[in-house]
Every structure is written in structure tokens, then in C-alpha cells.
Image 1 (cartoon, rainbow, N blue to C red):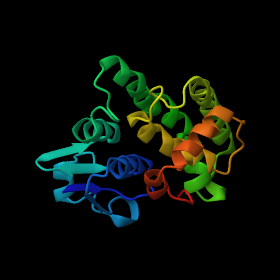
Image 2 (image 1 turned 90 degrees about the vertical axis):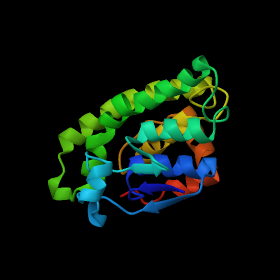
Image 3 (image 1 turned 180 degrees about the vertical axis):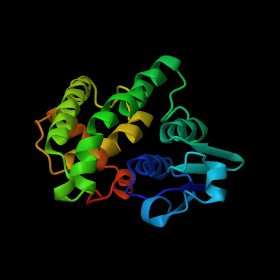
Image 4 (image 1 turned 120 degrees about the vertical axis):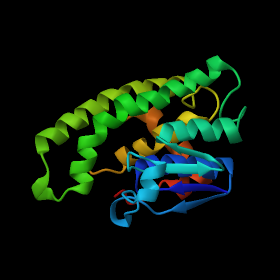
Length: 206
């Protein structure tokens, strides 16, 4: 049985839950992080010295870092379906997982935390606007790619969707001004039509 530690309103936990639900692997989720605590206990720190979520245990294997967990789950439980055997096909989607971590998530971070997790009197309007502009630049890249192919890896739904979709879900449900991105919005709807996404990507965002 796979065990996943993490609260469902964590975007990085949502990635892994989406993946687990999609591949149909039996798992249990243990609430951890923020109001649930757990992450500072000695037992948890022995698994994940960073004290963050998610952490996953599959047999004797313990993993942290959400995208590493996604790669492992797809390779171990869905090779050929979500993790192509061809290195070139696999890399076409895999690059978007790195893009999510290095470009998209950092750009959106301040807007999300100020608008969703801070009370109005603590928000920095200038920082939110800079974050909004930076996010729009990143999403222009994503929208152009999705105008050329239905999924991030090309013709088929794949591992990259697990990494990118939870962040897009946040963006499209935040109280922020957004540019219209037709290809992105159509892709998001295709993602949300999947039962696994409906179980992992909750509303309201918190």
C-alpha cells in the first residue's frame, strides 16, 4: 500500500493525488502540514528532512519532491501509458515538469499567497501586480504550446499534466485579472473532465 503524507490544499500534494487517482494505485493519505502539523515530528523528519509535503512511501522506498514522486509513480505504475518508453517522447512532456517548478510556480507564488492566504491589510498590491505580469508571460508560452498539441507531451495525456494542471487550477480560480487564453482554457477543461482531476483539484482554493 502506498502512503502519502500531505494536506489536499497543497498544490504539490494535489499533483500526487491526481497521479495516484489516475493510475488507480491503492493508497492512503495522511493529513500533514500547516494546521495538521506532523511535518516537524522526528518520525516525519527522518523520512523528509525538509519538513515539507508531500512525502510518499511505496514499500521500502521513501520519496520527497513532488515531481520526482510523479516521475517515479508513472514509471513504476504506468510505463507506456503516462511515461513513454521512447526517451524523446518522454522528454517532450518531462520538460514541462521542470518548467512548472522553475518558471510558472515562482512567477505565480506572490499573487497566490497575497490574494488567497493573506488578509487584505497584509497584501502588497505592487508585488501582486508584478507576480501577475510574470505569470501572464509564462502562460503565453503554455498557451502557444497547447494551441499546437492537445496535451503537454503531444498527442496524449501524460505525467506533465499532473505537474502543471494544479497550478493552472489555482490561477484560473484566483481573484486576479487574467488574459484570455483559449487553448489553455480548453486544455484545463479537458483535464477537469477527468474523474481523477475532480477528486484531486478542490474548490475553493485555499
